[in-house]
Image (cartoon, rainbow, N blue to C red; front, side):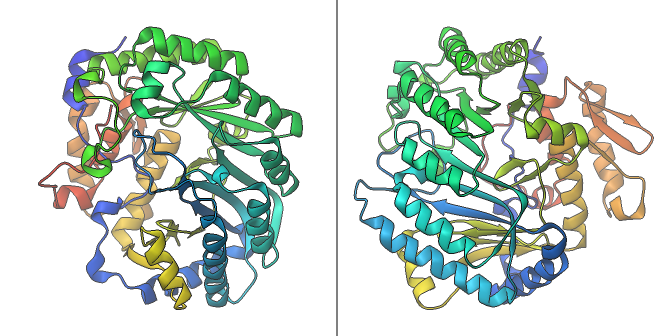
Length: 455
């Protein structure tokens, strides 16, 4: 059972660690677009032939605003915006191809948003065929997309399948009508059922459902009902996310709830504990943080084999050193540096049309960053890390070990020689454990709140 004392003690604002350093602590003073290009070219030359690259395509348009969402999006019902955005996206791809000077081998591709299925099947086909025409597709590639159950049609799914997509995730969030109304995300169970069944009928090998706990008006009855409905569809993966309440980022526009409508931290965690128990009874295994998978799914297999990776696209069953993000606000990763694109469609189009890679900010990782990044990745993916070689040690290692002492006393982690392992009790506090390594944050503690709560 949940230890309420530990919940109160460790439920503090903290990053989700899809990167290290996290975006608020990127060092702009040492970053430039030219340095980004240099590190990307070097990393590409080192790794393309061995492991290929990952691509992330950000399609930002949504026809309505879901008020739980913190993604960068552009709300419109005018589908005429698709054509111009596609043109710019493909121009950006050409800018990267000119820089790389060799055909990329695409190992992994993920399409997110926004609402990717806002785009017509024909336009998704144009984007993908145009990208693939100037690249090499790796053997056994991993292609995935986020689909909105209300707008994902059989035509969408067939086009994607024919182009090599075998994994799709559907944003369910919660089936309770009162909760859906509060977050402005109205989608009946029947729509999710139809989209899931068509995906499987066409041949998709992994269907994932996203469910959020901690939403306004959510209670145990609603959570149990949502999970029972999920049971009937038996998705291969479940992303069971904690609602990130960050109104200083998202604002409160169109929001159909007040702060008092949110469950207390104790109630929120109870929702998770009940959900976790039900998922495990259904045959799912908890993977990393926030994720569950059937043993037949590739994410479970990669977790068992220790090959799971985490980046700005979330958890992945494969790793590439290079990830290029195309589109408004997309983030790229050369392993040695990060770069994020401008955050509005207007700026994005203007920069690309001027022949500029549309990066607005980034970070060049130093030697210390690279070492800490590996430890945080190990903890987030494998719930363990070790300090048994010179390559794994950094200047403030002893201070980090001291910061971990209290967590060890609380039963959240344990040591076996130089190996640090997160215990079952510590799994829900893995973000807190990673924070003890986060020297960028510890040296520059924020004066205002910038992260969601860790639990």
